[in-house]
Image (cartoon, rainbow, N blue to C red; front, top):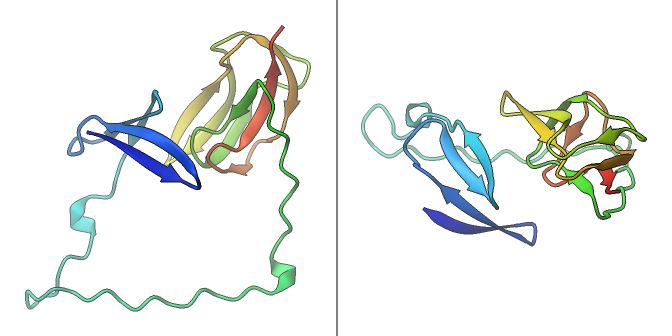
Amino acid sequence: MKVRVLIEGTAYEVEIVDLHSRPVVAIVDGERFEVWPESASALPVGSLDGRQAQAPPASPAPSLSPSAVSAPSAAPPIESGTVRAPIPGVILAVRVKPGDQVTAGQEVCVLEAMKMQNSIRAKQSGVVSAVYVSDGQHVKHHQPLMVIKSE
């Protein structure tokens, strides 16, 4: 099954290989992801007397004082050779530093998402000109991780 998904103004082509297999294999813009959705038995579907369960009312979002909210850091500039996070997660290890020579396919960092470790690899050979993340840092989908300048 193929679908087009629009997330924050960006369109993605998603192909689901088999929705009923586990893990679900999704191919997003040519990149393969494995997803382990919750089992249907974990979801509330009814009450003990057989009637449809009513969803509990949504609780209001907690209010945060201005001091509890950290100011967003300045976003790094997007330039040619930027390596981006393919999915949101936590950086487990950064394998390169600015000035390092890398080859296409070389692992440059490891990102944990959904309890799985994902190797982030260089798409081109070149020199690492900037690294924007560090071990333990949470990253968002498509967040710039580093820049590799081709030679």
